[in-house]
Image 1 (cartoon, helix red, strand yellow):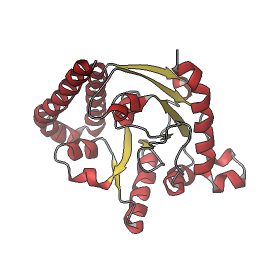
Image 2 (image 1 turned 90 degrees about the vertical axis):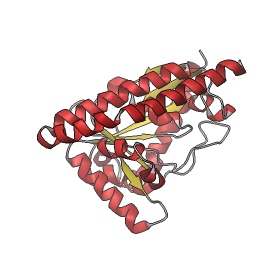
Image 3 (image 1 turned 90 degrees about the horizontal axis):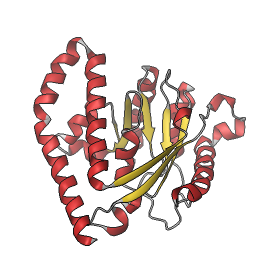
Length: 253
């Protein structure tokens, strides 16, 4: 078992390193294509990364069950909001996005060569939670992107949750929900179950695991009561907790 976990780790890490290195010509070509045909470059980059992430999931032995994908609107930008247990949460959820989607990531990732270049090309935003002014700028950028038709994905717990009970979520950062509040875009709650079993629960090895990704029904902020609109983060968190509790029986199968 440990040998298999070691092999999965080596193969996954090797693939990611080689992908980043061999993607340099890809980035250069897309840069010039994007000057004349930005929509083509955006879509090609999205599908390229989604393909790479699907290979990562294959190499890691991840078995994925997806529920409620029909809840994602195909004709408008959305704000994806999910619980956060693992580094693999981004890999899993991004591989399923139907359209252009930028993720809100911690600002330290902006300093990682090649990775940060890809993230910027994919409309990701870097959030400095320790600097209120810079954090506000990031939220404003997110609002602008949604208005341009680019979805945003956030994990409002702010860090990976290590609580034993997956439904025991950390408090949501209300500020990150401002993107939906100011644009009126639908919020798509996401509940991830079992993602920490891939890596975090037996660090540093990667083991085959069953992960359940559940999409809830769209939440339209303007349709909520004034009280729920004021606490949009708490309202969305309650929906995700309900989904996590309901997913337990499905995930164990």
